[in-house]
Image 1 (cartoon, each protein chain N blue to C red):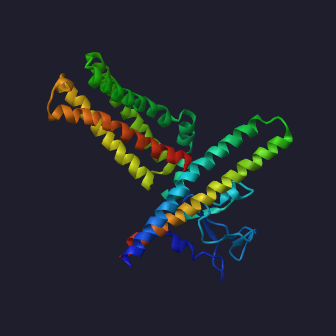
Image 2: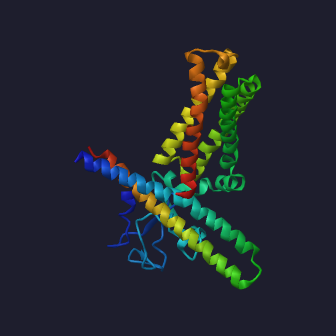
Image 3: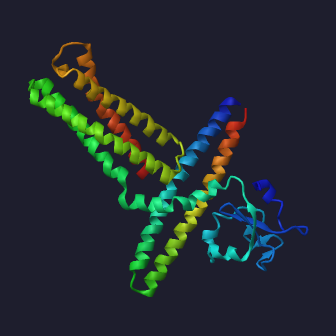
Amino acid sequence: MKKDELQQYSGKEGKPIYISYKGKIYDVSKSKLWKDGVHMNIHRAGEDLTNDLSEAPHGEEILDKFEQVGILENESEYLYIDNKESLRDLYRKFHPHPTLVHFPIAALFLGALLQFLFLITKTSSFESAAFYSILFATVFQIPAVISGIFSWWVNYDSTLTSIFKNKLRYSAILLCMTFFVVIIRFLISDISFRDDILSLTYNIVIFFNVPVVFILGFYGGKITWH
Amino acid sequence: MKGERKKKIKELEEMIEVVLLSIPREIASQKFYQTAFEKATTDISRKFFQSLVKEEKHHEAKLRKVLNKLQNELKKVKELK
C-alpha cells in the first residue's frame, strides 16, 4: 500500500482506522483510544507514526494487539532508524574516523616539513624521511577514508550535503596527490635531486598536501561544531 | 524563475544539512543521559536523567520528521522543470 492509499483509511465516514509503523500497516479500529480517526488529539489515522511512537507513553509492543493488514511501500526510509542502531552504538564506542584521520594528517605535515628542510640543507636523510612519512600517510589514508565513508553512512545515511560533497572531493584530491608522490618516488628514486619540471611538480604536490589537509580538517570540524 | 528554483534548492539543502548534523548529537545525548540514568544512585536523579533521555528521543523523532519533509520537498522542487 502506498502512503496516499493509507491516508484514505482515516476512520471517518465509517472507514477503518489504519496507521503505519516501521513499514507495517495496522488496523487500530478496535482501539477505544482512537476516536473518529484521532488518537489523544494528536495523531491522525492514515499516517505513518514511526517517528511519533518514541514520544508516546507506551512502546511499540502495543501494536502487537492489532492486526497487521499490509506493508507500506518505500518502508525502507523508516526501517533505517533501527537497522543501523547497533552499528551506531559500535561507531560511538570506537569512533574510528576521528581516531584514524590524525595519523595521515600528522604524517603529511611532517613530510612537507622534512622536504622543506631537505630543500634548504640538501641533507639526503631529510628527503628519505619525508618520503617515508608521506608513504605512511598514504597507507593510513585508506582506513581513514573507509572509516569516514562508514561514518557518513551510519550517522548521516549517506546524504550528500555541501559538507560531505567537499569532504569527498578533497579526500579524492588528497588520495591522488599522495599516490602521485609515492609512485613517482618509487619509480624515480632521485626525483628530489633532479632539476627538471617533474621534480618541481613533485615538490609542489608535497607542499600542496598541507592546505588540502587543512580544508579537510575544516570540513570535518564543521560536522562536529556546526 | 530558474533563479528562484535554484535559490529554493540551496535553501532546502542548507536546512537539510543543519537537521542532518543535529540528529547524531541528539542520539549521543540520549546515550549520555541513559548512562547517567544507569549510574544514578538516587530516585530523584534517576527520574531526572530518564526525563532527559525521553526529551532527547523526542528531539530526535522531531528532527527525523522534519528531515523527511525537507527531503521530500527538495525532491519535488528538483523534479519541477
